[in-house]
Figure 1 (spheres, rainbow, N blue to C red):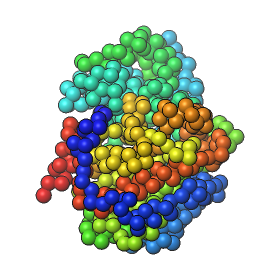
Figure 2 (cartoon, rainbow, N blue to C red; figure 1 turned 90 degrees about the horizontal axis):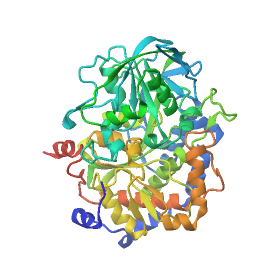
Figure 3 (cartoon, rainbow, N blue to C red; figure 1 turned 60 degrees about the vertical axis):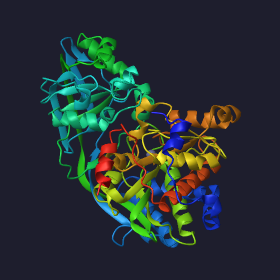
Figure 4 (cartoon, helix red, strand yellow; figure 1 turned 180 degrees about the vertical axis):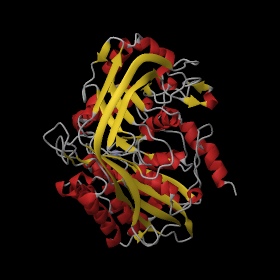
Length: 553
Ligand SMILES: [Zn+2]
């Protein structure tokens, strides 16, 4: 979905205040600087913070640092007098990468760990064994009544292993009539597919990875950042798969070949209405072992109470956690510093909180500063917050989320907004970024579903507008500043969820653009917190009805 300039003026919200006319606000904004953000990133990404995994020393150092920064400038605790919102995770610490084998009529199909698959425990028990589970080709693995679509119609999934393609029929074909076309629909998310398969009794899902459908290369999964200790929300009230695996496209082709099927033909059929899952003569077996425990982790939440409408609130979020240390990582460096992902966003959050504290008076509405836990493991901190919100969901004006902002320019000329046009926070953002001379653009690869992969999404799924926007270059700027392309290229190949995500990689960072992102977020939230506007979802999105119902008196 794209917002045209005409649509923007049509939907423009009237916010009460203008930043330039408010010297107190402008002075507070001046406190947000590249140097300030750099200092906090260096702290959070230092080896002493051990890659900020849930539980343990890394978490202790991280949450105390963030809460300490909040307290120092007079931000109030956000959860019943405390900065901490603890919740339990079920932890599985695998002994090794595990083993997955597939047998067909002609014997075993060659499958090797890391090259062909990356395996995860579904059930968190010490010994996980799956024996000769029959393999079903599940297409995109979707059941969607409103699309009259059911990949599992009449198919018994009990005990089965399902091969599923990433994406949905819309992203695969670009057909706007199917699941909203090229942008990934909620049905296309991994979460929804795994949940559905588990609910139908499946034992395992083998998700076919392609760089195009995932948005990142296979090496991102096989380099150890995505494996290591695994977590799920403790006390979840739904069945789990026994095993889950990402499999590479070449491996998927071999499997379908062994089943006597044609990969390309099946992928095409799977995107065509009427597709139904196909039984094969293959069977999958798998094994993982590890230590099981319960880990407590903590969201960090600070707040400023609104001076006129304290029950209404704006939420800023950024995840403090990263991948920690993975002794099984195939590289020499086992410590995943998470400097860009997401010490950048966490440092922006801290800087924005300081700026609010520097305002001459609190804004009209309350503002929450929410450093989320366990985002990397499945957005668990944000999900817990949304299920246990300190400010009623109907009264949350919006969630402004920051995750992995790019340290490659002194200033940006554009901003990427995944899910652009799906809610009116984005209209409000457009008003702010005009002043910075920035163009707004949708995610360049909306089929990969970046929109669903950070902490604004649990808010959106619950019917609260959310936004994630990150500074980026226009084509002109990218042409003029080669440092940007080099930075992005390095990050996608070697930085994202790799141990090498460290400060000043691949070269000395330029954080001016990140500071500008933080100022834009500050101004956006400040406008919303001083207005009485209720930005809504765009008509026709899956979330509009939820919000309307929630806001109806
Ligand atoms: Zn992140």
